[in-house]
Image 1: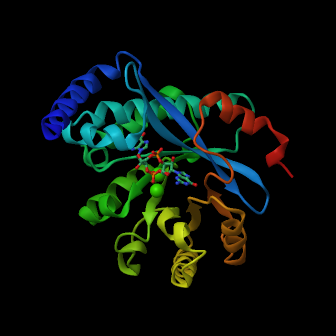
Image 2 (image 1 turned 90 degrees about the vertical axis):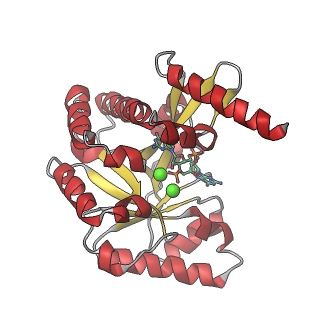
Length: 267
Ligand code: C2E
Ligand code: CA
Ligand code: CA
C-alpha cells in the first residue's frame, strides 16, 4: 500500500507541477555569498521553492527530480533564470550594482538546444549586466560531453556570463579536464565541511581543492559553512568566499534586501 501511495503521490505531484508555473506557485529564495575577509555580501544564489497550495513550501529535493524526469525542468528552469535576473536588475536599480546572482542549471537545461539563445533573451529582456550572472553546473553535466560543454560556456563567456562548478570534489575533479573548462569558479561541496572538524583528511582535501583552483586561476567558494570554526579554517586555508547558514539561510527577497541594507555585513 505504501508503494501504491507513493506512486499516486508522484503522479499527482507531476500533474500539479505542470500547472504550478501558470498558477505562479514557484518562488525564489536567495542565499548570501560572502567575502569573509571583508564581511561583505558579494552576491546571492537563487534557490527555487514550490509554494504548494496544499502541501506547503516544498524544497527542490521534493520536486526537481520530477521536473527533470518529465522535461518540465525546461520551463521551470527558464522561469527561475528569468526571475533571478529580474531580481538582480531590481537590486542593481536600488544601487547594489556590484553583487552577482548565481543560478543553478540542471543537465537537461544545459543540454537543451535553445539554452544559449534563452540566456541571451533573458539578459536582453531584463537588462542586467551579463557579467553579474553566474551559472552553476555540476561536474557530471560538464563531463558528459566535454567538447559541447566548452562550446556552450565559451558562447556565453563572449557576452560576459560566467560559470561555476557546483558540488566540486564529489566527482572526478581531474586536472586534465578542469584546465580546459572556461569556468570562473569552483564551489567546494558541503560534504567536506560537514565532517572537516572531525576528519583531518577532509581538511587536506579542501586544501588540495583550493590549491588546484588557484593554480588554474579560478575563484573558490565554500558552501555549507555553518560554524565559526569552519570560517576560521577557510581563512587559514586562504579561501575568502563562503556561503552557508552561518551567514544566512536561503531567504525570501524582502529578507535578502534587509541583509543588503544591514550594516552587520559591512566593515
Ligand atoms: P545546490 O546548488 O548544491 O544548493 C545548495 C543547497 O544547500 C541548498 O539546498 C541550500 O539551501 C543548502 N545549504 C546552503 N547552505 C547550507 C548550510 O550551511 N548547511 C546546510 N545543511 N545546507 C545548506 P536547496 O535550496 O534545498 O537546493 C537543493 C538543490 O536543488 C540545489 O543544490 C540545486 O542543485 C537544486 N536547485 C535549487 N534551485 C534550483 C533551480 O532554480 N534550478 C535548478 N535546475 N536546480 C535548482
Ligand atoms: Ca548551486
Ligand atoms: Ca552545491
